[in-house]
Length: 254
Length: 325
Image 1 (cartoon, rainbow over the protein chains, first blue to last red):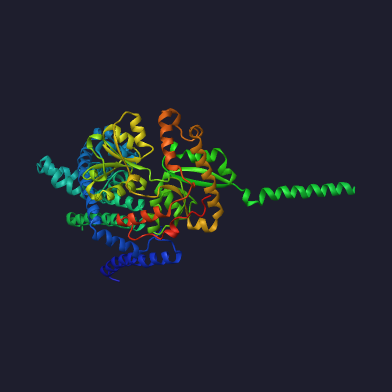
Image 2 (spheres, rainbow over the protein chains, first blue to last red; image 1 turned 135 degrees about the vertical axis):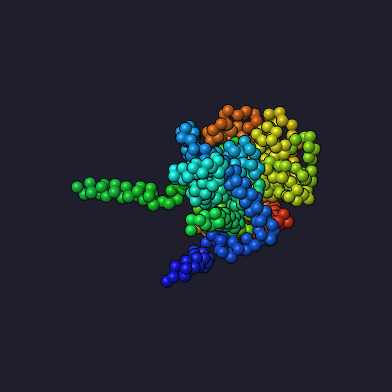
């Protein structure tokens, strides 16, 4: 079979496996005879999705969570890239700050989320910070690894051409580190969804985490499923965006 | 020799009889029941502690393990058949049944809805309509506090979107005292009394003055009623005795509660007795445990009008007085 045919087939197989899950889920509900507050059927979830969509609540709360994620990603990636570059360039800085950075990752976000809500309030700010914190470490580590992986001979070449510091960063270090950096961003993008939800579950009056909790409190399991699926779609969407960025900026690798 | 054999035979028969009483008498077997209470250990749960300490549960072969988890978790677990009972407010039964949970309200503990909205006097909130445009602190968008507030808003013609509901956890006293929330929702017999004892001025609006809702009681499930009705009857019988003893002797109830509420001894006894005595007014009934069918009808209609349920729930399955002594 030709590679292109195989590639097309594998993409369709992926979609098919997702579509097959729906009749399988329906079968489980029918055979188990579980009530819908324990396991709603796909139809129950779909109807609940339509209800939340038409009353505007789903789009509103999804928008809030997406905003938290995007801002959290921007803040987290921004700080992580700058800090990662500095640590990559200075062994002294790395030695000084590494223990704090590793320790910060050992503390579960769910443990510090309530503190952040107390300090920053129950608005969007605390959720953005929680997102940024959860995204920070993977992007930081990948930035350090990516920058340090640049070959010494390339630095020699740039120096021989009398490149300025900024030209070295823009024309050598950034393109060379980009594959690893974007790899870290893939991880960070999906983790950011978790960050937003952790913050909303601690204390929020809006967002998908809030909808999820509301569904739980009102015994509306279908709503819980709708919120979970929306989170999955958000994570997949963000992952796809990073994949597109890789295709756009890493064409030279192909 | 014959006498020895007869004696041995008699002894053996006696021992067999004793053994059978101990191992095969299922009525004598202690049933361990985990009971979700819906709130933290508190003087308001005195009737349950009294029922345990006076042995009323034990006489019914029930051993209670108090579980201070969320009310909604208790309702869900009871509806799923994981637990036989939970302490829950009446409207939770209708909300749950509207989602298909087969929970049944089997014993009424509170006779009136015990929720109040507490506000700073300078806000001049004297009726539900005055809540329009205000920020209101409450434990969360669940349970009796939330439904009580929604009912009050509905009676005042205020749409929920016209107020800001601020989830503050079970920290209403702290939130009000610190000035973070100048309007909070709490239990009539608890937060207003505690705040007043700390010399905080407040206005209070009782939900019971505006809406007839079924309050806290013992819920069970259709499965438990079908498979073990005697357990439900035993639970109701024991608890009724505990409630009546608590009403008759609050001082004794307070002393018993000291064993179950860790920090009660550190709190002002006068205030805690006031909480208990105020709660007792909510528990008094002509027939302890009986819930009023008309109040159920009223609440069913109200929840539909409030938009919390799409259609009235079949009340013939939602509650029963069958097990009330």
